[in-house]
Image 1 (cartoon, rainbow, N blue to C red):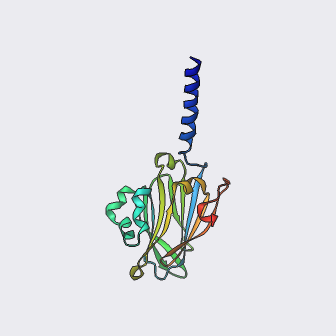
Image 2: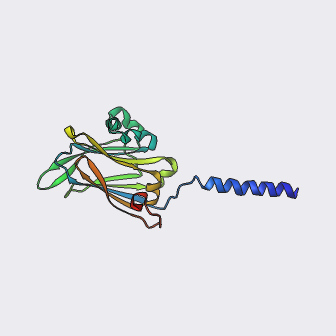
Image 3: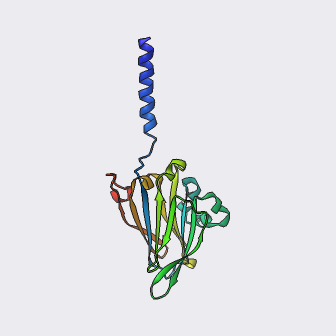
Amino acid sequence: MKQLIRTLGLLLVVATFFGCGSIPFMGPGSMDLSVRGVELDEVVSIYLIVGDDADLADIDDPRTIEKVVRPERHGKYVTFGQFKPRKGQSWTLEQRLLKPSHPDIEVSLSKKEAKLEVEIDRKLLESHPQLAIAVVVNCGNLGWGAYQHITSFQIGSIDSMKLDVRGPTITLADSSTDSGITPPDAQK
């Protein structure tokens, strides 16, 4: 009987150990993403796509990147937004489409500058553990560009991330976290 209890206890410890290894770190609150248009002369549209990682795989290949913005794909995403740069006294962004839009994802535009703010409530990771974010730009004749996937780990552990759009190039401008975890992009 003691041997059986020890064996069951050992199995419980092993199961707990291996089970916890698959649970991603998820801090409380939300992740804030800021997308700022720095050089927009060639940009036709900026797209914000939040969905399962597998549904965003086409952004990894420049030849298939355009597929992620096709209307028949919108229903697969948690949130899909299209924003057009507008030149006035300064550049601003105009919302062309934000559908679907999940209630745990807040999207807002600055009225004074070309800036898109996105706040993602981390509780969304509970129902979508493979959640990822992509920012894609269409530059007409210059082609398409994308920022690599922002993964569920990054959503769960990074408090804020800032991306800059310079034509077809999207770069990480800044990221911060209070969790003590260094974001993968900042480890370079």
